[in-house]
Image 1 (tube, rainbow, N blue to C red):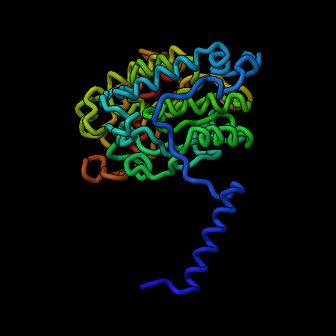
Image 2 (image 1 turned 90 degrees about the horizontal axis):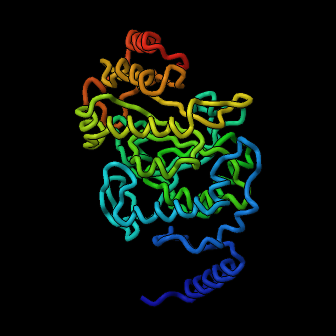
Image 3 (image 1 turned 90 degrees about the vertical axis):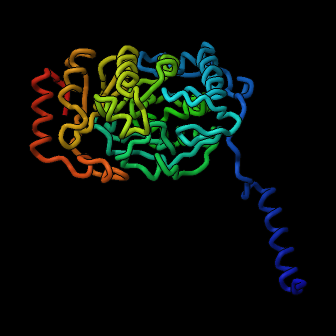
Amino acid sequence: MAPTRRKFLKGCFAAAGAAVLGCLGLIRPKAKAATTLPPDPHIYGDPSTYGTNSPRAPRYLELERSGELARREQTLWAMLEKCRLCPRNCDVNRLAGRRGACSTGAEFRVASHGPHFGEEAPLVGRRGSGTIFFSNCSLLCVFCQNWQIAHRGDGRETTHAQLADMMIDLQRRGVHNINLVTPTHLIPHIIRSVRLAIPRGLNLPILYNTGGYESMEVMRLLDGIVSVYLPDFKVQNNDLAVRFFNGARDYVEHTSAAIKEMHRQVGTLRSSRGAAYQGLLIRHLIMPENTAGTDEFVRWVVRELGPETHVNIMGQYRPMFQAAQFPPLNRRITPAEYNQAMRWARQAGLRNFH
């Protein structure tokens, strides 16, 4: 049926209005994430002008000045052609849009960003941690407490320029760090965005907030880029890792090696005026019936990293997502289980734990 004259005129006016607004920059087409290697380095400005001479200035500023950050970025992008960003080594061409275990191709999503006050006290300080929650994950815990983001991939498709905007926005809001939550599968994107933000004044410590299942090749490329590492060490048994982490049969070996490399790079946690600017803080979640192997974990920390290592032994486990299908993960821990974990930490000789 032919449109009425009123409907026809209404459509014409709507189209004309959209065209005018588009010219004014008020309506923009949805930006697509880059699917090729980054463009020439001139888009990042003059690296000789970046940063500060402060001894606490993040080392990524010097890496950018020297050209090393650009070289590492190119190496990371090349790793996406047969993806090996995490130990799963999915070997798919994510630059061509293929997706591996993390369900992420060339594009990426951000679930939220803003000052966060729920992290450990040295990371929050007085003004909060500048948290950016990335969508999707390469570890995929069955008890994930952020499963809507990590498993379902809730979030908004984001460009590198928009991610750089988030970093600058957080810095302007006075946070103490840029806290990258679940960054493992998106390292090339993150480094590119950091490089876009540096000419605009980015100079906050970068905090790498990870489940711990990391590639040593990538860890070495992050040396000097990350100032504070915040890894989990979830379980001490690979048979459990296979069940709980989507078949990650080598979780213990890779997480152990990655955390030791993090410690080598940044050392023990160091703070100034109540906020950490460099170092390692390990998280470990107590699970029912000592499923996480807390007694083994605390001994490992003291043996491999030293008793001064900062550790958060967390007692807030809740049976979320698919945990009901994996007893004894189908219940909270008891006060007795929490107290036993604290005794193990003291007996092992840990000095900086809570």
